[in-house]
Image 1: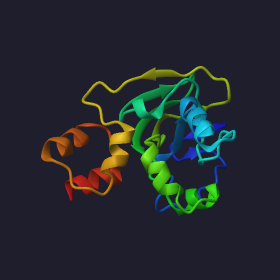
Image 2: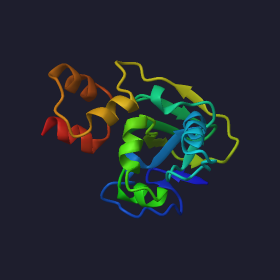
Image 3: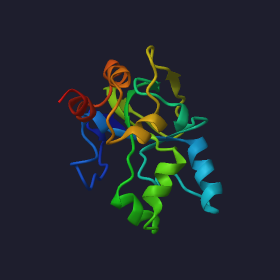
Length: 172
C-alpha cells in the first residue's frame, strides 16, 4: 500500500474530526496486543479489528512511546499519540462497555505521522528506533487523557514530538 503524509492511499476514515490527518496518518498495533486481545476475548482477533492500518510483529504497544520510530525499506513513521476508544470502536466490537474495557487493558496502539512516504506491505522488515528523550508511553497517554498534568509531566510531554492537538491542549 502507498503511504503518504495523510496515511494509506484509499483508507476510509469515517470521522476526520478525531481520526486521520498528518498527525494520525497511520494507526499501528503490535502483534503482542492482538494475541492478548484474542485470549482476553476468547476468539481470534484478526488484524484490522480495531481499525489499525499496521500490525508490527513482536511489538507490545505498552512499551511504545511518543517519538519512537518504525522504519521499513521505504517508509518512516514517528509515533505521535495513542488511540482513545470511541463510539465507533464500541459499535464495531458489539459491546457497549468496550471503550471502558479498552481503557483498562492499557493496550491502545499508537498513531504515527509519516516522515517518509513510500510503499508498505505485509511481511516488510520493520526497524524500531526508540525516542531519544524522556518517554511518554501509550498507556500513560491513555491514562492521562483529558486530565490535568503536573507541570513536570506537562513539560515532558511537550519535549516529545506529540501530535498537534495534544500540544495545543497543553500550551493553550
